[in-house]
Length: 299
Image 1 (cartoon, rainbow, N blue to C red):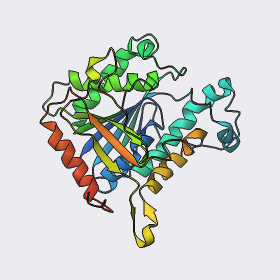
Image 2 (image 1 turned 45 degrees about the vertical axis):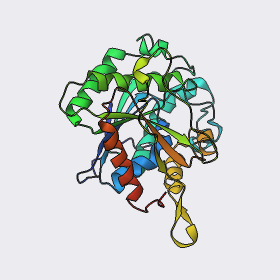
Image 3 (image 1 turned 60 degrees about the vertical axis):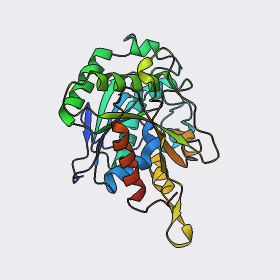
């Protein structure tokens, strides 16, 4: 077995060598290591080009992600297709993978909530109810993060009906934390989803049974184009950065060939719990992202 130098403490992994000037401060809330790959270029551009700060809060230990680990098993020298072996080793392996991916994206801190990654289900009920996850513990940590860090934006996945129940629950935890926040610097919370240029955007207004997931009707869909080409002979695109990030998740074999690899656009919806006045701030963020670095072509 290869040796891994784990650079994280038990619940927090700081990238202390990275320093930032003033820029947007963002908290990304996901369920598993690798969920952030759907908006990795946005995060990369925020930290590297806008000189902002990105932190992540990851709900689960990632121990259940072994369905497509056949090649990863060879790489790591472990039988990761066996559930017992996988659940023993994947939490540590996937922490190292997200640390490596986070370094590429310029992530400052990763906060691990250490909840069980038990099985695949579309139903968030066992988790949000507190049956399978320690909801009060997550709430305390999320409340402290928002109170201490003064984030401008919180980014989650889009909690559509076809999402994993863990993903939906992570979104609900983020939404409820923002809703509870009583400070003077309330962050704007948006939901990201990847899209290929040949596909139609997911139709989503609200996750049934959870009114806090409603999308504001008068808000646009904000888009970052990771596929436009630049430099000599149009050889480069920001999809290269996305592939750097994806490549760190060697235990998750299908991700390299799946929809995330084929993503051309990173799209974001504006939750209804936000004040309408924040729409302009989000638009300004995406205008800045479009103009930064290798600027996207004018529409």
